[in-house]
Image 1: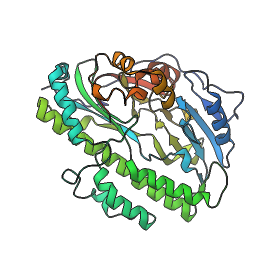
Image 2: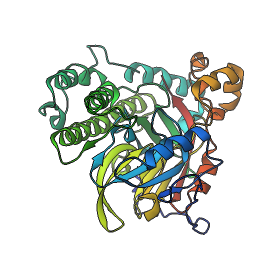
Image 3: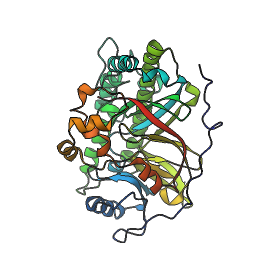
Image 4: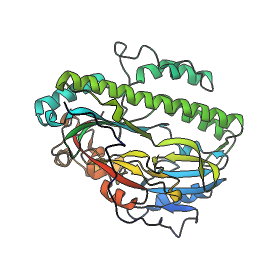
Length: 403
């Protein structure tokens, strides 16, 4: 067994190219700062214009993985003084990424038989939607089970579905990935969120806010009851999302222990979420910072930037860039909408792009819209935000589990 890793003591950030100022888009207001990996799509520009000119928005930071999802782009950080915009947080409240090193090398996963056993066991231990009764959690963690949400319907939903969805992955770009670093150390990385209860919380508060507004972007004041209830429920969903990821980590550890004999070094754990609302100080005043598909990147704060399925991911350290609201990208970002990706990418192309990475090839048809070519190049994204983050460690995928 290898010696445990202590991230933040042994690891030092690499030196990256000189820092540069944010880009300005002449068609957007001056309080919009951009770090772009390519031309800004016109639909994103329209959405950013609408967001930047909404009431009480004082600053918008656009990340290089930006792409349009519903009314507000993914890959943005938005600051306000009082108003809360639930759409600028998104439906999967608390969605984020966790990574932890194992106490062994990645060498066992080079064996196809071992990797196939790991994949089979992961499919048994980590469902996509909900656990059957025999594997569902007996109860929610203490910091979740005794707390009432802002209305009885949400509370009942949390008590009913929250328990059976705890430790489930979801679909789309959510993943469990086994990776190796340059020292051949094995790492586990998981991307998932607050599952159905987070979506229900978001939708309930959106529907409530829409009763008082016909605007495309709806808001509530943080100082009134509606705003306080949203903040309360959002905080609960963030805790649930974190508990969900850690439940899956424990399941992965059981699989690895049974198949390869290795354990996880929990002291090396790094976790960050990218769909949230936090009260922070920027530009000399307290502001509400909404992040949708953007992760915190304060000075020396560790973060995780995954590539696409089959490409490298990165452990990074924040540079504390004020113009970005101390934020960075949360990944590579989609280059193709799912519908277009499914039209353009066939199973054979996906299998070629996944060369050298173990995955369930029986699901290659369902996973075509998650192919590496459906995403932006993560290294281009990192170059575009070199004044936001510094690379600490590169992680190469060995095995990917998706639903």
